[in-house]
Structure formats: C-alpha cells, structure tokens
Image (tube, rainbow over all chains, first blue to last red; front, side, top):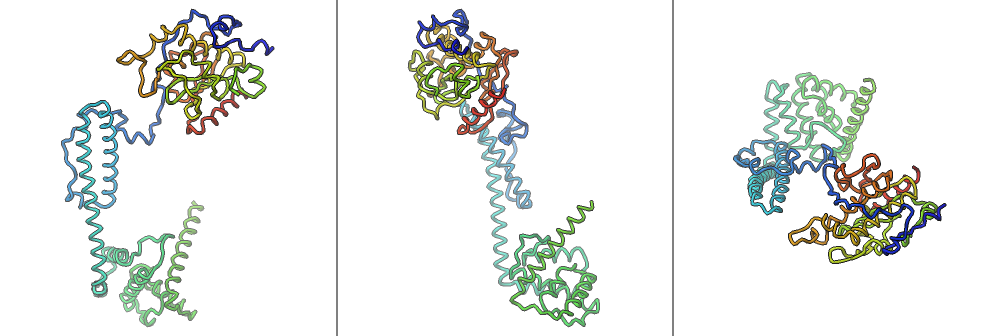
Length: 298
Length: 190
C-alpha cells in the first residue's frame, strides 16, 4: 500500500511533468497574494505589565494631549510631604517619563520634530524628580545632624524629658503616650510594634531601662508600692516597661515583680541583652498562638 | 534524517506525525518546508530554485531557522500531498509563474522587493499564502500551529471549514524544538 505513495516529485521540471497521482497542483492555479500579518489576531490581556508604557492603552498621544501648561513641583511644596508621598510621587514621575520616552522615540523614528514636545515635558518632570531628591537629601542631613548633636547633648535632653514627665500632674494623656512612643523610637530605636526581625542591642537596652525606670518613678508613690525599694534587675525593669504608662499598668507590673522576687533570682549585667531578647521572643510567640486560636475559633 | 524525501511508510515507522513543518530564516525571512522537524541541505537544494541577490540560497545554520508553523493533516498521504503542493507552488513562484509572483510582491522605491537590511518579509507571507492555497486545492482538513497568530493574517484568507488555527506555546527560542516535539506527540495521539 505504501509503495504507491513514494514521491515522484523532484526539482527538475521534467520529472514534475511526469508525476501524477493527485500530488500535482493544476498548472492553471492562480498564485495568491502574500498574507500580510495582522495584529488583530493578537489579544493582549488587560493587566499586561507592559501597558504601563502606554497612556490609556494608546499607541502614541498627540502632542496636544501632552501640551504642558503646568510646572514642576517646587522644593518648598515637596518639603511639606511625607516620605510615602514622595516615594509614590517619584514612581508616578518615573512611569510618566518612561511613557514619554517611548512616544518621543516613535516620533523620532518617523523623523518628526514633534518628539521635542514630549522631551520638553519629560525635562519638566525630571526637574520634579531632582527636587524630590533634594528634599530627601535634606532630611537625611538633618537626621545625621540630629544624631551627631544627640551624642553631645543627649543626656541633658533625656534629663529634661524625665523632669518634665515627673513634674507633670497628669501624664495619662494621649499627648504623653505619643511623646513616650516617639522618644523610644527616635532615640533608642524601639518600635511601637515588635516583630521577629528585632535584634536587642545596647541602645535598645538603654531605652528599656530609661522608660521602665521613668514609669516606676512616676507612679510608685501614687500606687503606694515604694515598699519594693526600687527596681533591682533588668527583668523587673522590663516588666514595668512592657506595661502601659498608667498607674494601673505599673500596679500590675508591681504585682508581677512580687511574684518574681519569691524566686530570689538576680540577672547579672552580662546576661541582660539575652534576657530581654528572650522576653520579646516569648511575647511574639504568645501573640502568634493567641492569634491562631482566635482565628480557629472564628 | 531530513536528508531526502520521506514516504508515508517511513514517517509512520519512525514515529513522525502527519505534519509539515515551516521554518523561517530569521535573517532573510525565507521559509523552508520540511516533513520532519529539521532543516537540512536537502530542503535548501530542493526549494530554492533560481537564487539571485534578493533570494539567496540560505545556509542551514540551526540558529537561524525558527519554526514558523506546523500544519497537521488527517493522514500521512495527505501530509505528503501538502508537502509536494507547497514545494511545487514554490517552484511556480520562482520559475514557471515568476512574473505573476513578482507582480504580487511589495516593492521599494527602486522597484526591488521591499527589504530592511537582509530581511524580506514577503517570503514568509508567500509561504502562508501557499499553505492556504494547498489546503484549498486538495481540500485538506488541517490544524495549523502558528509560532504567533500574527502571521495567520486576515481570517478571510483561510477556508474556515477546513482549517483550525492554534498558537504554539510561547517559549524561548532555545526550547522551540521541545515544543515541536510536543506537537508531534500530540499529532500521533490524535
């Protein structure tokens, strides 16, 4: 059966003329014009990442659409913006410039002078980006200056803060809670929310000691727990530190300290970092298991 | 293995599917028809009849030949029929009906076949057009796997009752032969 299918076709015209059996195309056939490829056959998904290089999915905008009557952001305006605002503004600018570059390139390829209008707008946006960098640099310099200054006058400042806290009649206000929180974060690098990436260091420890002692000194006489005779080691200080900055919080902490003193343990200075790290890890684990329990119940 | 014409029996016993492969040259845009997923000197000799400066004999460098389409037919006999038809149409375009073919090609300002660098898009467009002509001439039920559906062109150019268009998996050129092999296996299953 297969023997009949052996090819008779070969490149020579003579053989072509001889071969038969339905393999030949009739010589009267009309050649068809070439099939021109078309992009109509290609469907691009709506959220394709490369759409970011197009404005409203348009191939190129008219120069009228990008006519720029505005101006770039000034440094003065940008100084009033938060870091997050600046960060998003930077990327808005960057993406718009990418679009403009692409469109300018299209006009360039067509040797059209219209690309200049796109480049003009792009230059204007670039100016905004330069100003964003300027503001960020200013802030970085200010932070460095503040840190350098703190090394000189830091203790004086902490002393002032401590006096103001102790002297104020009512410190159980949102204003003081915010102040404490800011102090912890700015000077000792203690974040408001603890997470597993946190590493306890000397600075952290210093912060724990300062805040813990401050709270105890403020509230000990008020709740009548001067009988404790001061906080003796880091475990006691940390207990006060992690409670809220209220009379109620310190009272609870003192109750825990009573319990702790029954064990007669005293933590030496060399183990302090390790111990605080342990406390924090335990707390995070506890919070995680609590969260899991509640989510399972839900 | 693609060094000479292969008949239906050989294709069947060697595990090839009833398919015809179209490879395009990414440098010049020329197209080679092949019965199995390889390009060899045999096809170059057989399919380029009157080379000139516009249509040079291509080399068989493997990095230059990329799959453009795979046409799958109902049985081996029909695949061979289509293969012969394609080569014969190529012969007509180059030799017996050259004037007719030249009249259909797009020209540049010097009345040469339009090109950019070495690349002349007309060769691959003519190959697609010949494939549609062969399908109509022999009334072959066909499934065409396109490298990109872009090349398929307007739907009006294809016989809707006979032809089904599919797109190959989009992979890097390095893995193109893997895709061809998958298409071959699928062709054998059907």
